[in-house]
Image (cartoon, rainbow, N blue to C red; front, top):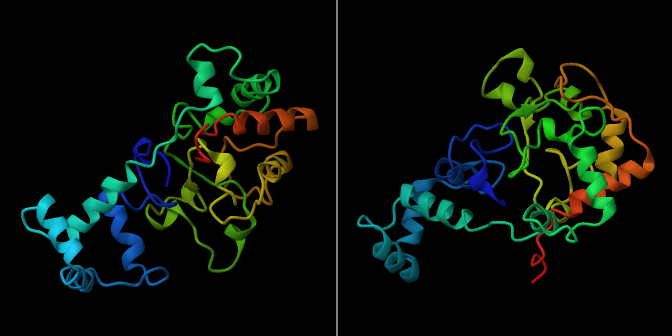
Length: 230
């Protein structure tokens, strides 16, 4: 939910073009809230605090679209704070450790991590979709990601690139939650995925040592907001 204003598409398969449209999808999904929007409107109109609050903000009070706008407005406030990396970028050479600086070099090196191919600063996302060779994409009745929205062969099993700010705090990882730690994410990238069928051209096995792996993880932790625990 963090830094959504840095994304241009929403949901793992990008089926929502903006936050307002996205806000309705979990509410109406049979797998989540399974709520009819018209029924939700009727319920909220019976709750005084919502009825008066919406009337203050919107001339037409509680409507489905206004509910979506209100949720989207709140989501835009969920923004990462100052991190060691942002301080370092601003000119404070002491903000990152030598290990974290090495990790950033590996992150940007096309012959090493090459993470920057998909995770572009400042949001650390390309707002694109990639097949990372995850095992569940090969299973029967698998979620095919972006292919469900745009049935183009290259998008089969491709999912949206998440941002990396505060990534230390948002385990588990990948769209299926199959990696519990950042270290296990790195191990997966070193392995090069569980299959190579239709994987993104940018996704290749990492040729890095264990020491370099730890440096990459250290850099990712440098993206954690300093006030995240407060």
